[in-house]
Image (tube, rainbow, N blue to C red; front, side, top):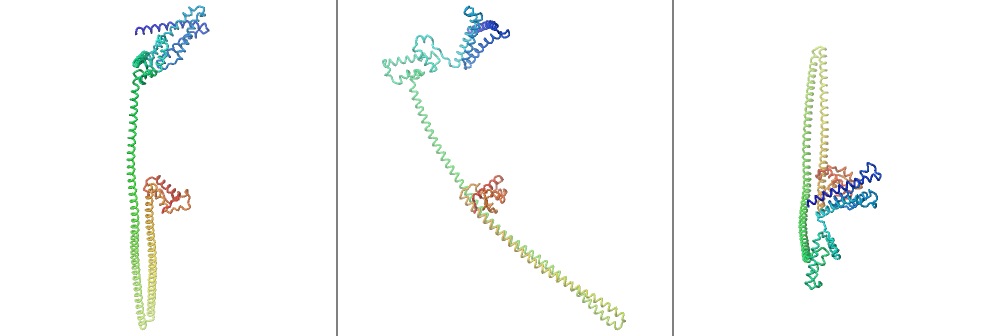
Length: 519
């Protein structure tokens, strides 16, 4: 086989080269005679013969890739026919000398025959490798059995049987089975059962005798398998239903547990809120009591301090008055002394007047006059001291009256402050009670934490003085923003996000616009 392959390859190559060379020389001369230029004439045979080689090579390549295109083969054969015609007619009319024309046209024919042989070999090998090769029915069978062979061929092609010997084997088995069945029933095939006649019926569909006879058992087995599969699916469906039911029960139990947990958590929060409200009320009451006690203590302490201050001032005034009285007494004593000295001087002057000259008497009178003047001045000083003491007494009494009025005003202010603080405590107590009632109402309504927070902001706004009567929905939000700030919402609700606080305030405005009025 190797030697034959080498000989075929060498011979085919030699024939192709010789044919191409002869065709090239002939077609080049023909091109010159047809008016081609000397430069283009040598390329004419190259274009014609090279197209044949290119088309056949491309056809073989596509066959090798299992993507044949018949148009390539038609084009190659068309160019081959043209080449044969060009070569045969190169020596003149073909009818004038047919032998000479055939000698020029035979070489391209040999080349195409070699290529077709290679093509056949390639197709055969490709089909063998792909498993799609179909044996041809020998020609003698068509001749010897012209009626049965078409049915034979039809069964091969319709059932995809590519091996002719395999098809012959199947036909022999069918004929042998049919003869055995006739012998069994004495030539009357109608007595055979349906299962026994299956090979003849199913032969047209590509079944062998064994396959046809095994079909009922296989179908029964497949029916059993289908029944088993159906039963398995039914059991799986029942199992899935049971699992789904169990899972639903588990989810229900879990939901019940979650509900109980939520109820316990809500009750805990409710109890905590109530305890917190009671603690706030108690704290407010205690704060009010402490504020009242502190106020009373402050008032008493301030009253004591003012009393001590008044006593101190009174003591200072008494001391000043005593000092003035002592000074007046001293001045009066000095005046009395001066009067005594003047009287003594008058007495001396009178006594001396009797015994001394007029000049001496005059001197004595002058001194007496000076003494009287000094006494008068002393009297005036004493009077001035008494007047100052009286003025000091008046001022002291006026200061005492002002002090008493100030004390009364301070006592009244503290009483008013205590009353205001008491009212504030009562207001806080009422607010705590209202908050407690609101929490109880929200607990009863089972509101979410967000709804509770929004309602708390609305209550804060109302307690802060927001009046929504007569305001439209677009006017409530700016009014609420004026009385409640973001910081107030964050502080009251213990949230750190300003965005969350702003949303709470916006929703509170919408709630108030919708007619919500806290009790």
